[in-house]
Length: 175
Image 1 (spheres, one colour):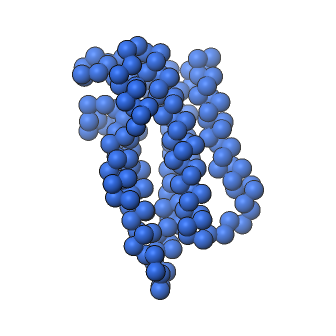
Image 2 (cartoon, helix red, strand yellow):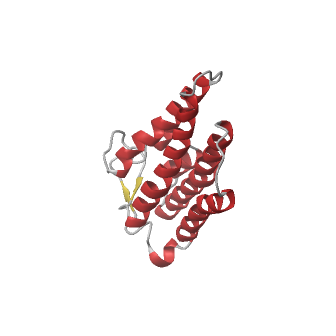
C-alpha cells in the first residue's frame, strides 16, 4: 500500500514506474512466497521434493525480478507507459504484456490457489480444532485474488486501474 501511495503522489512518469516496480517486488517476495510458506507449514502439508519445489517457487519471481529490473532495455513489462490525467492524481497506465499475464496467471494465481487449497483441504478434515482459522485465512486471501481479475481484464471498478491496495485491505480486515 505504501508503494501505491508513493506511486499516486509521484510527479513524473519515471518515479511512478519505480514505485510500480516496488509493488511488483513486494508482492512477489513479501506476499506470495511468505503466504505459500505459511500455508504449507500451517496446514502441515508434506512436500514430496522440497528443494526442487521451493527452487521453482522462488526461482520464478527471481527471473521476473530480473526482467523487471532490466525492463528499460527490452520493455517486456512496460511497453507503453504514460500518465492519465483523468483522475485527481495522474495515474500510471501501460498495456499488460504476455509476460505480465503469464506471471500473473501461471505463477501468482497458481501459487495462491495452491496455498488456499491447502488451507481449505485442512479445514474440511474431521475433528479439526482450527477449522475456523483455516477458513478465515483462506477467505481473506481469496478476496484480493478474485478481485484482481478485474485489473487483469482491464475492467475499472475504481478510478485507478490497480485495485490491489483496496482488496488487500479488505482481505486483511477479514484475517
